[in-house]
Amino acid sequence: MKRSSVFGVVLLFLTLVLCSGFHAWAADPIKIAIVGPMQFTQGEGHWNGATMAAEEINKAGGISVKGTKRTIELIKVDSNEFLSIPDATNAMELAISKHKADFVMGGFRTEAVLVMQDIAMDNKKIFLGCGAAHPELCERVTKDYDRYKYWFRITPINSKHLVAVDFILLDMVAKAITKELDIPKLKVAIVAEKAAWADPMVKIAEGKLPQMGMEVVGVWRPSPTATDTTAELSAIQRAGAHIIFTTFSSSVGIPLAKQAGELKIPAAVAGINVESQKDGFWKATGGKGDYGLTVNTYARVKITDKTIPFFDKYLERYKEAPNYNAGTYDGLYLLKTAVEKAETLEADKLVPVLEKTEVTETAGKLVFTKDHDVTWGPGFVTAIGTQWQDGKNLCVWPNGWQGVKYEGTVEYKVPPVMVEHYKKKK
Image (cartoon, rainbow, N blue to C red):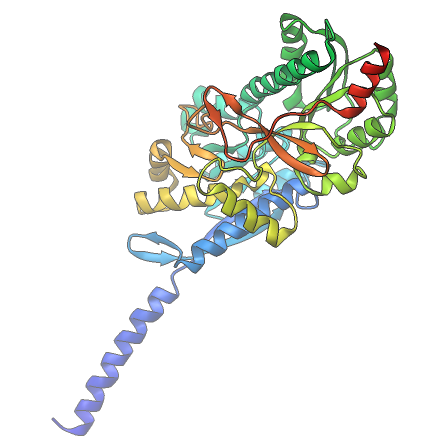
């Protein structure tokens, strides 16, 4: 063979190799829009959790689609949904029409997520919810499956289950107070931010608390972004409440906790307070939020084998504990599992695969109900209860509930200011 012919064969071979390699290298990334209130801790959680998962998955080669590895490209979209529902609408439109996202993930404020959900459904985009708790978001799947089947909730558990956990925590607090202070009938102040997701929880609480042997001394509904709650707290103190039962997802959780501490109200603060889930809560309240109890998703306890490694890595990188919106981390891994099973990004083919997918991630075993909600209960995602104790946010529940106790859980403590107040009265 002449030298020129040999050179030609070699050149052709190299060209084919390079073209083949280039094709694999150049496979389009999978675009995932992370949509949330990026100027607030909830949006930061969305973005941080997703970033960690995307980096890990990409480092391992990406997501395999029909044998081709494709990396994840995250798109950060600020919904500004705390301040403007139209901004949230525009954000979802932007994610889909301009950024050409293959999937969308995130959302927080129910009122905003409902409209963002409609836009995603109109475009047949799979939308993994990682923030809004209202049952209606999943009930829509049952009412109109063909339209809403592209919606799945990853986190949190819905507000009906949050209520259940809320009351279990409340019962735990009530029993601890009764045991330590021997108060015959506990008085409870219901304090919930003025938002749609909290409405059904307030209604249920008003009916449920008397059945639990407690007296409701009033209902207060401050703005989600209120910066001063002294008027509400003063009224609560005058009412003689032993427990301040909170339902907060927004920044109002900080001033209420701080001002309750400053006023030295002899009451236990318990319920839902998303702000108290993050490490910055301690500094933001000047330590006045100590002994507050909240429903939570993450603490440094062994919910699954993945929880503590994720928690530690998140804490090291972002200098704070993950809030529940960081469940985008689990969402990305769930999506990876489903895409690799389905071998496609096509939404209509992915939906039945997602419906049947079972994965154990950082918050528990993730399995969807018929209406595409996250399954709650022992063996699945339970949520946890965390209490600030001397500057540390510790898991205090489940602590034997239905046989569930996560390694690292500690006992709940009645606030010392309450113990001191009522023991002096005796």
